[in-house]
Image 1 (cartoon, helix red, strand yellow):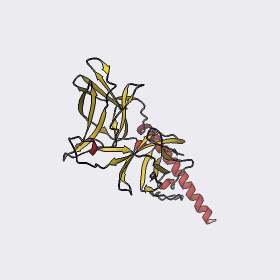
Image 2 (spheres, rainbow, N blue to C red):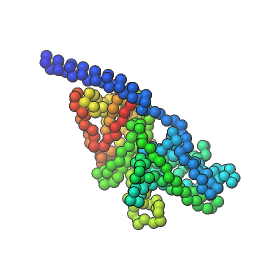
Image 3 (tube, rainbow, N blue to C red):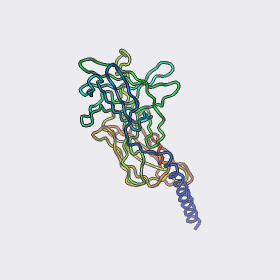
Image 4 (cartoon, rainbow, N blue to C red):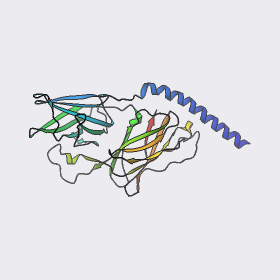
Amino acid sequence: MKKISFFMTAMLFAVTACTLDKTDYEDEINTVVTEYIDYEEVVSITKDQYLINIVALNGTFYKGYNEIRLNITNTDTNENVNTSDVTFLPLITNYSGNSTSCPHQYNLDYNTADDYYLGYAVFTEESNDSENWELYITFTDNEETHYVTQAITVEEQTNMNLNMTSFTADDGEQYFIALVAPQKPAIAENELVAGIYKYNQPTNEAGTFPDPTQFSYTEVTDYTLLLDPRMPEPSMGNHSSLNNEDLTQQDDGLYYGVVNYTMTGNWTLNFRMQNQYGEIIKGTEVSTEFTPGIEGARSELHIDILF
């Protein structure tokens, strides 16, 4: 009888806490989580007779994953440049003059339907007083190559659903995982999209700055991101959900899975990363036990979100 009484008390505590927290989080959603759907100009660059416009969601570069759209116009002819090989290299330089990059698409693709060059950048740091981002862009028109350098600002990502993480895996390589979608989840089964990238260690000495071989990243191919989402707060008791699906790579290079959020609040996406040979190279399994009043343990590899 005592055991039943204790169990009912624990359940009542957990349910009551969930209800209170849910109300608080729903309140916070209205002021914090904004879904951006419009691509707007981030920066406009004039170089000789060329105008280069770069657009991104909400007209802002954020820490984390950013889809980049770039348009080049020859102002003498008022025509778009659409036959060029366009390269895109973001670099961040610290107060000592040392430069590093971030996962990015160096050779941009041309979108013929919408008439712009397409790529991405996963900015790993926000701009600050001691570290500054610059874009190094090249394009060719009329057999002449043009070089463009432009300072940019990378803002804090306030939407935790678009968080990212970087780490060194058991194979000694440096990896990056960046959440791409959903921006604003629902209490439902949500398609979860992420990019997984690896830094390529240079195999040659640096050439003329900025030598792209020193700042090379690639999309990770044919890995699997094993997923176990949980609510780690003590009041949630390590609560999870059913019908989640691990993330696998699709034709666009991104990784797709399903995460089932059963209530609003703090969730942790616990991951284990499996390489193309089926080996777990980062991440640990977490307990599946219901633990009211005790904070749930997170995987060695995880990303926290809030909705």
